[in-house]
Length: 120
Ligand code: 5GP
Image (cartoon, rainbow, N blue to C red; front, side):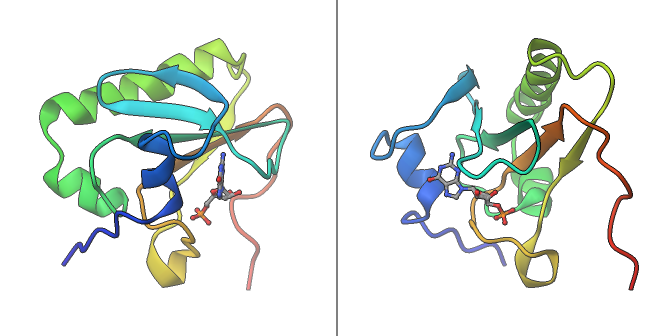
């Protein structure tokens, strides 16, 4: 069900083929600034493993990867002063508006983020 394309842009970042502005890095996780920020803080947290989406990661990642990823989210939030709050978004496949097919969690903050989604 979850076919991973190793040519995607985040796989290339993980291989060091494309530079990134790293915020945090661990054995299993990388966090870096989004190239087109939509808020004063806009960081992407990605697993280093080949997972296409949140549901793929949640279903198949090891316990170690899952813990490491979420501890890194906490590290990013604390390190970038988002104690006042933030929004975490995981766009998933076509209906979710996902563009890059490597799981990434957007961490957006630094201002009031408004309503969750636009009403119909
Ligand atoms: P999606 O729509 O897949 O949830 O979000 C993909 C995100 O990746 C977008 O916010 C886009 O700005 C970001 N992005 C795309 N290419 C690059 C890149 O080469 N470097 C960085 N840092 N971010 C990227």
